[in-house]
Amino acid sequence: MTVKILAFCGSSRSASLNRKLLEIAASGATADGAEVTFIALADYRLPIYDADIELEHGVPEQVRALQELFATHDALLVASPEHNGGYTALLKNVLDWVSRPTAAGKPGLTLFAGKVAAVVSASPGPMGGVRATLGMRGVLEKLGAILIPQGFSLGSAHQAFAEHGGLADENTDAEVRRVGFSLVRVTKQLVTI
Ligand SMILES: Cc1cc2nc3c(=O)[nH]c(=O)nc-3n(C[C@H](O)[C@H](O)[C@H](O)COP(=O)(O)O)c2cc1C
Image 1: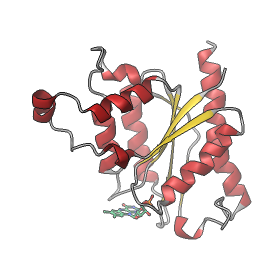
Image 2: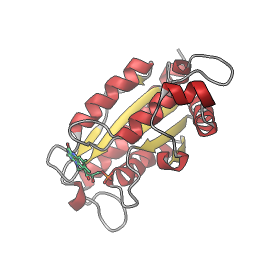
Image 3: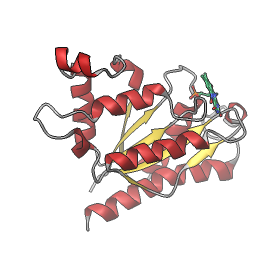
Image 4: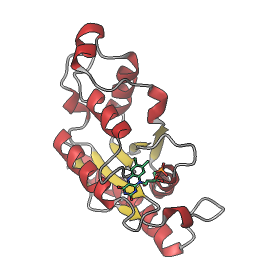
């Protein structure tokens, strides 16, 4: 089977370090035959979740598009920047909207249940945004995703990338790629159970 991975990052910054790290982790997955779909969350221009908006106007069309993407992928690869010790509002807002009931009336949680997920993070700070990954893992787990133990938090990330786009330190680069590789391996094993 070809594992389909949905990859996204909680930063909308054009020079996002997390987006760069996401690409490296994803390359470990594509090297193992997976198909990776990258989406830019800011492209969906969602309002901050508000139950009154949902009641009055329904779930926005952009959320329907995102729900369709979640429904048609086997695994999630997330890069979670750290803002004040937690994951970003952009990331959480998108997940909150996606978790709403689908157009077919199914619980939004069915879009996460049994999906395999991995989380990485990058920060110029020494801890690499590890607190954001712990929080994000908890959110995804609560939604029903199966988190693999592999992940990576890249500290001093503003100095870590080489000109070719990979990480300057070969061992670190390999470890980040292994996150994508492990995501594919675990997904394949789970679907054959
Ligand atoms: C509001 C705000 C809060 C931040 N808080 C943290 C933090 O708690 N820990 C940390 O390591 N970096 C923190 N940072 C720095 C971000 O990690 C840094 O801007 C990072 O590059 C953002 O990710 P990006 O490069 O993918 O856009 C913060 C940045 C902002 C704007």
